[in-house]
Length: 218
Image (cartoon, rainbow, N blue to C red; front, side):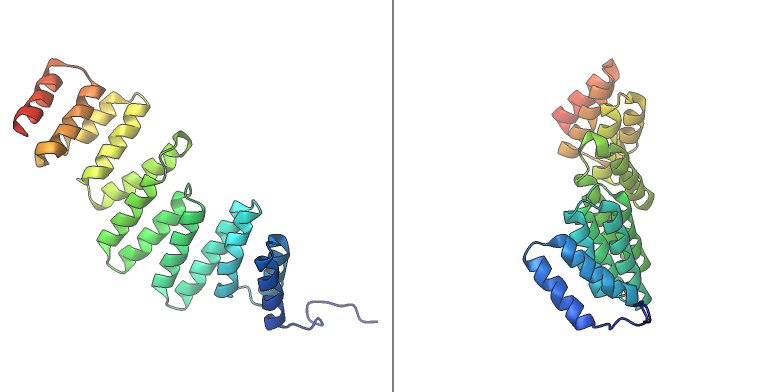
C-alpha cells in the first residue's frame, strides 16, 4: 500500500477552514491552530490564514510563533501591494505583543515609505505610551530614539526620554535632552521642562530657571 503523504492526501481548504472556525468558536485554540497549520502546509503565503493563526498562538502562550505569523502575514500583503493592510497587521501584532518594539517600528517604516511622516511619528509615540513598565524601558527608549530621528525636537518624546534617564539616575543625560528644547517653548510646556531639569540637578541656576518659567512663562 502506498503511504499517505502530503502529495496523496486529499486537500480541502474549505473543510479545514470550517473545522478551524468551529474549534475556535468553542475555545479549542490548539485544535484550530492545527487546522490552520494544515492549510499552511499547502498555502504557506495564505495571508487570511496567517492573520487568523497569529492571535490564536498568543492565546496558547506562543508569542514568538505568533510574531512570525504576523510578520509573514504582513509580508504577504506587501508582496501583493497592499501596504495599508500590512500596516494594519503590524499594528495588530503590536496590540497583542505591546512590548515588541519591532512591530511598532515596522508599521512606522511602512508609513514613511508612503511618505506619511506624521503617521509614522504617531505610531512610534503610541508604542512608547504602552511601554511604561520598568522591564520595557529599553524597548520604549528605542522607539523614542526613532521618533527623535524623525523629529529631533519632538516635545513629548524628549520629555519621556528624559524621564527614562531620570529613573536610571542618568541626570546629565536627562538635562542634555531637555536643554535642547527649552528655547523653543514657553508657558506650561516650559514649566514642565524646567521642573524636570530641577529634579535632575538641584542648582541655583536650575532653581532660577524654574521660578522664571512659573513667574513669566519663559
